[in-house]
Image (cartoon, rainbow, N blue to C red; front, side):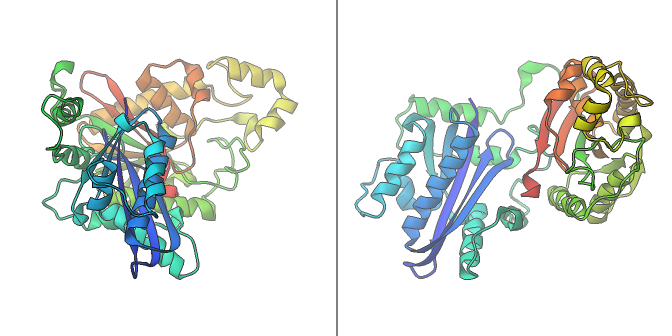
Length: 421
């Protein structure tokens, strides 16, 4: 069963006064932010705003996985005690909100914990962003939010923070594991199901000793697809045999957002890029943020689509239906004058082997294209070639694969786009 941490907060500038809430859903296993919610709600009290933040956080978690277990962390003692059933709910404005919160998940799936305000900074900043937007006559926008970065920037250096690449369950979950270790449930009798669940969470901090020998730190490739070009939204074939387009204005914005997210994490030790312009421009945006040079690796270039370069799928279907069907049916088939997926797999594999040997134990950003990224993921999973057609990969998305000394690989992340919202 997946486990989420929901952190929620609400505030009112006047109590009652202009109010807003914020909530964030975190993957307890990785420490990654999965969803954010915030809203300006007009004039309300602090407690009403806090309850609305709780409801929004629970609904966001439910949308991700209705079967998950959820651990709610809030700095509102009132909400935590009332939702835990230890305090009665007397205020008429809060009764329906508490009832709404209780209906989102079955009660056994949700636990509550009070935390001090300084440990609830992400949700607090979201609530304040919502109130600031309301003051301007606007609604909160996820794409303009800096709450997560602001919260991380304010964490004292003595507090463990994620140090691994996106999706790194071994190193990137430090913050979430520390939060789980701090759980206290004195009101639960010893030996209860809640005790067993809490003990399991704390035990999860230990290395998985039963899974084999310690092979040392893996070479971890953080895979960044380039930002959009003018051809991307038109869904035209754009490989290494075409016009080599530059990033569009939207693509440059996407590259900057990806760069900001990677710089905030601070784990990239080297940058390697495809030779094509769109990748080099995306890579340079990251390099400018974190002060690294960009190395070019020809093996990371996109498939050469030959005669199909610049065409849409529909146009190819209309003009060369037999060739397209053959290409869809076999990894060995190539577009006329182009490159087969089997050929791409061979050169991507060779590039992978060179880079894993050179960057053993390091975290490296590879800025590349749809096919090379999907190929690396497919090979890591041991999936058949047709798996290439069963993955979604957005422009400027992040994926991550770790490669160990014994030759095994672990997919850590696929198509992460939270930094673009």
